[in-house]
Length: 284
View 1 (cartoon, one colour):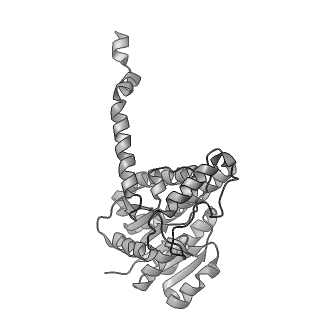
View 2: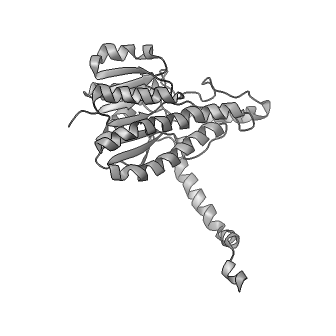
View 3: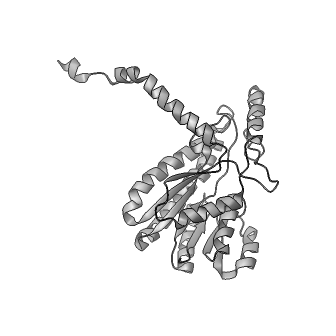
């Protein structure tokens, strides 16, 4: 199988780092981006010219365009685009400031769109490519205290759904990955209430915070290395899915959420029909 050229945002740690290491270890080439290039020095030392380290803040549109261009010029092509950069803003909707919501969307949504728009002309010219978008289980079901984060991930779900339909005729594939919780260096799920992006807490929500923390701590933590191997299978597939869950912890919950939605729509069909009205009847 021919080796691939990757462009990966958010490569300094977490799943992004695991993805980069898995690709490099099997002989692929990677343009790895991070907000601080020094965080990629160990990759350069280990893999040499197979890795192109790029300092990038995805909120800088010009920098995104230049980084994608440099990667294309350096390696001669781009096969896999991984939109991984992002963070989770934590807080109840009442607690979250407008600026915090804007910042969340600026990084998670607009940052991803900038990468896609910068890469697409090269992928269309090649007539091939695979765009990988990291979403979340929170992109399929919203959780308390994650309104801003879920809003950003739901936006990415819709954008990439449309994108997949728009670029299929160009030979470009799109896959949205929806991870559950994955282990940090401590071997446990990261604490969503201790991530550096938390709204000013209102004591009215303290009880809810305790319940969410307890729920999260009981979720099984996935192995980032295993997720990276799964990603390799995805990008090597001739017919990859548009959406795929990574991890098992949230699958039962998602099944129930979608069953409940279908049931609710069915239960309220009479009202739905009433809301539609009958203009033809009224005109007679």
